[in-house]
Length: 385
Image 1 (spheres, helix red, strand yellow):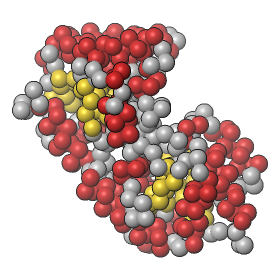
Image 2 (image 1 turned 90 degrees about the vertical axis):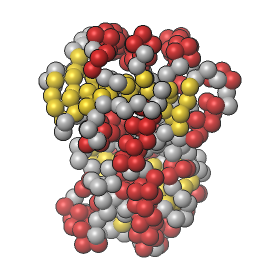
Image 3 (image 1 turned 90 degrees about the horizontal axis):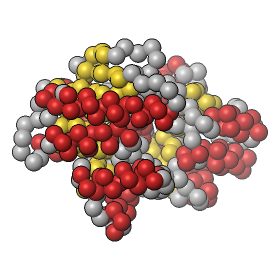
């Protein structure tokens, strides 16, 4: 076991970009810095951002790129490769966030320099990066290179891990089960009065608040969730005392706004758009929803759990491992509307259920997913020969 004193984080996008991967990379970097590890983040330079800055002790270097997306990505990959070679004495290990083209640069540089290289895989089964890579000649070439160079691929949920392990085509890949972490000191439960105040601050009454935080994309199945929400409201003898708030942006945003209008849900559903600080929303929420058809291990779900929010999620990906059905949340088949509606109705019938489940969700976040524990374990991985 080698003591790791410096880590290079490589990510095509980074703070202030809003997304689960970006948040996870920043929080892990800060946690490593708190342990005395020197962390440098290498990322692209979007317009208006400095080429170098310090974020809570994390050194962020942004490489300038230009042109269409394909040119932009190719330039960043090449610049990353040569930076890693030129500065090989400045880091002990490389941690790549997502297996996109920069991962090729890191693996190639690691092959030449002998540096430990880890690549975190993103996405749930079917929309994971391995599946997506298989859809193109360049993607298949990348996977062949990974089999030859054998970097460690960090897999965030058992569903994807078991599939990759059990498929002969991927037998050459070097896989390791891992997980995201959450800062359980920063994300904390609200007391009863604090929750009421948090709802008021968002312009809400004390109705049960169901919260979605994430990218508004088809695989999240928010349109189908809105339809189920509308059915539950139409079937109730009196309108339920409940609100649904969607925080995030993405390609489905306009379609979801139309669906809210078409389904006459403007009185109970609102879209808040993307937000930098999500804690006010978690603290106001009673139930966090994640109706995705496929999911890795949702960073937002872990943050909600740490804030003592009950979980209502599809029975896929990391949610199957993180959520104990009937204890810390309710799981449903994403294609079974009856199951989804049953989960909704159980919370609408008994608001104390969310309180009890939220307490257990917090316990799970602290015991299994705390950033402190994840940092201990990743440091051990970095230091392995």
